[in-house]
Length: 330
Image (cartoon, rainbow, N blue to C red):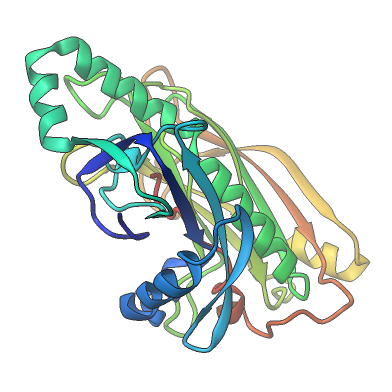
C-alpha cells in the first residue's frame, strides 16, 4: 500500500482483511546511505513474508538490521496512514502491506480540506486529531528506537537528555492562537565536517507552557578535557502548518564537568530539572520575551560511563546509524 518515507495524501479505513504495519529501526542518514532501491527490496522480501508481530531482523545489502511489525485488522485498530493528514509531514512513518485481500475506504487530503472548508466543525476535529497524534504512533516508535540505541551504545558514555517543558512561549502568529512549540536537541558540536546527532520533540499545540517530557539518548565517544565544554544545544520553534516554522530561540547547557565526573568516578551523574533561558541568538545575551515573561525551557541530564564490555561500534558515526529518528514529529 505504501512504504516508510513515501509521500502520501490519504488515510485508510479497513473494512475487511489484515494489513501488516512495520518500521525500520534506522536513522535518516542510514536510510539515505542505503538508498530507496535497497530498502524497497528488503520490504518486498523480508517484511511481506513475515506475518507475526514484534521485532525482527531484515537484510539490506548483505547487512542485518532491525525492524518492528504489528498487524491491523477490523478486529483491532481499523484505520492507518493518518499521519500524512494529521501531522507536519506528508511522509509515511511506516510501511503498510496487505497480508490478505482487503476491503478499504480512503480519505484523501483534498477531500478532507474540501469538507473542512464547508463545515468549520470538521476543521476543529482535524486540529484535535493533530494534537492527539502525540499519543499514538510516534511515542511508541520513539521508545523502541531509544531502547535499541541505549543497548547498542553501551561502549560509549551515554547522555540521556529529558526535555520536560517550557514557560512563557511568545505569540508569533498574529491570528492563529497561541504557540505550537517543539524543541530540537543536539549533543556536542559539529566536528570534522560531520553533523551533531539531533532529535526533535513532538509539537505541543496552542499553549504558552508546552509539556513534552521526552527523553533522548546521545553517545559520546570522548569526554572533553578539563576546561572544555560539552554542550547540549536546544532550539525551540513555533510550528506552522504552511511555510517554514518560526524560530523562537536558543538554549545551551554545558555538561562537560558532569561528563568528566562520570568518567572519573565510573558512576552515573545527573543534573535534574534545570531551567535554561531561551535566547534570541545562540551564545547571545538577549533573552526571548514571551507572552507573560521571559521564555525558559526545563531539562534534565543523566550521564552513564561506558559499559565494561566493548560494544559493536567504535565511533560516534557508527553508533549514530542505529535507531530511527522522528527527527520530526509525525
